[in-house]
Image (cartoon, rainbow, N blue to C red; front, side, top):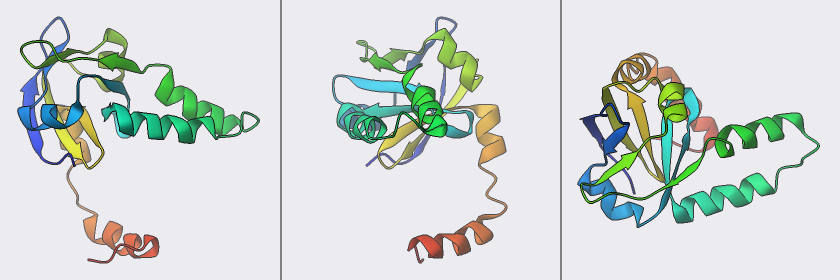
Length: 143
């Protein structure tokens, strides 16, 4: 399980250090793609394959299904760590997520999210967490 929050920098060439605790769980190859809310997501290969199977099952006749699948798959890339524990984030994905220098990597159970520090600060205020928590009861989550 991926968990925790780590601050790092992305260099001018687009290289980003992956925290050691995350590296252990990723394996040799993994997938980097667009994520929801303006972040990027890293999936271990087994999680990506499971997600891919769900995408394959979506009906091609449904426009929202095609758009949803295209969003995740079109920009996806297979990554490997270099000897320093870094990945190269393609320019298109850096632009999508607004990654310039300061980034935050967060564990989210089955995947890692990569945020620009600015977007992370905007999206992690949790001011409405009480209301969100109440809504989770409808999905079977009770704290």
